[in-house]
Amino acid sequence: MVTIVPSLNAAPTKVTLLMQALEAAQWGPFLQEFNEQHPDIELEIIEGPNATNQVEDLYTSSFLLGNSPYDLVFMDIVWVPKFAAAGWLKSLSDLVDRDNINLEAFLDGDIDGGRYNGELYRMPVRSDGGMLYYRTDLLNQGGYQPPNTFTELLNISQTLQTEDLVEWGYLWQGKQYEGLSAMFVEVLAGYGAFWVDPDTLEVGLDSPEAIEAADFLRTTLQKRVSPPGITTYAEEEVRRLFQNGDAIFMRNWPYAFGLLSADDSPVQGKFAIKPMVHTPNYSSGACLGGWGLGITASSQHPDAAWEVAKFFSSEDIQRRFILATGYVPSRRSLFNDPEILAKYPHYSQLLEVVENAALRPPIAQYAQASDILQRYLSAAITDQMTPEQAMNKAANETRRLLGK
Image (cartoon, rainbow, N blue to C red):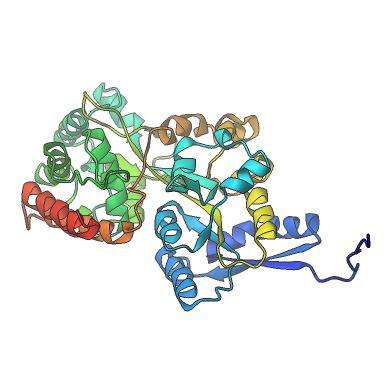
């Protein structure tokens, strides 16, 4: 038998992925470390736009044209069903089994969000989840505990507004974009409602509970608990208003915590976080976001790409990446890691938030379903339709989309 010894001068296997420019810069030192540790693989990160929908479009175009240049997809959790259903991703399930990867070390929602039709297509790299920020000083002044229900949130807001302690009660993402759908998933969960059941494709947007959820949002505007401009606000608009001290409550993502805690922040040391409010009969829901790595079905180097996915999602790399950036880990153990807690003491509270995950429907037609919901929910909160009319139309149009 002849043993073939590879040439010492053999060129390393090149592996490529596309990533938002900001995140590509943040991964720069780890890219260099990976290449140093894997001399037989050359990882190249291509910088894309910072707008995630534009990055998704670039990936989609490359797959539709054929011969995609990418071996890996750096993937938002909501891209998984669309990309997997189109046959653009390689299943990772056999690789996970082969290498004895312990998926239980990750947040359940991050793993569930990476599956399609029972197969795993995405290894979680970092997580995300919506939560309620509240002003501790204002609640103390009014003698209130943090609210657990929608009614408590409205009542506390109106009382403190009446006492002229603050201008606005509750800030949320009301602009017609993906953030509106993400925010509403949490309100739906809090009312015991649902959007689309991924197993049966049953649509729940016209249930009494879902209509109540939409009505809650409209009520915040009618009672002037939320500012009229909320229907044009995304994450940063509400974050700036809250940071300036103009509101008691805010729904936002974990990224805001660091900005609110900055030395020049008017609310530094005057706020805290908790899981989202809900009705008494149901529990809180946190819309799960986050990013991970999938292997393209067209990759000529799936084994080398798998080494990258394992490296980026490993405990040590995640720990150092989180310490450097303040993002949210996808590994459960890191929320109570002494080194991370020393820098970000609120991470132990974050775990409670992200473990109450509410997934956006993992269906292949998610982008179209989200567009439908955004249009009709926007109509409800801007008084173009009643919540009942809007949710009925959204449900019927979604059913047509899904062939139900």
